[in-house]
Image (cartoon, rainbow, N blue to C red; front, side):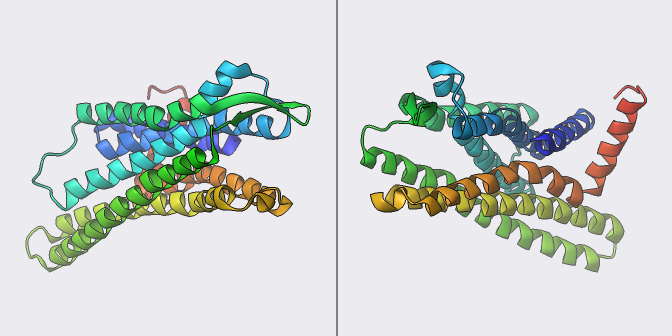
Length: 290
């Protein structure tokens, strides 16, 4: 939790500082993801641990409003990554078409949060209840039938895992091909060779970082998704298996790592962002204006 809070705070503040100098849609969307990851560290993980190992202390209303946050934040991350892929596709593959403006980016971020709260948070809020299990209060979903629960889980996987993954994969394949062609063309050009090559390599580094972020997101999310489907569609005898309970706990832990690892990927992939972060830390430590 501490690493997630510190790392994502550093990413957010660094990108915010760069946004003041030069507004960029990708940076704004990365800031949106870092805010979501911060909420995981501050709200989701502590509440999940309390609900699993202790007693739900916050009553029915907050069970319905705070407990859906884990799925809402996962949705925000998925949709933000998808919008980033589409924005980069438009900027690199189709550079002469209209790009996402600063105002449009802010509107997109608001729509992302509203969409995720509506299509995931609201349905979850309607079925969450505080119940007593083994003498302890638990905030859990109580569906009207097994079929409705299974349909909702399949809907989540198709709409917020498979479809975004297909869009992002197609976008980044096209982007990588275009950037490779630009690098080859700039290396062979006679005029402004150094400038063109530098610009193409800068694009390549940005794309590499974004692909690593997407890859980490899906690699660390898929175990939880597969375990969720296993739980939903396994027989009732298997659902009571201790091994399955441990598998669920392990995959949830792996999923939480995803929200901690993003800052490491971002700063490891970008020397410019590392330098901006160190400069920001220096100014804050010495009381200089940021």
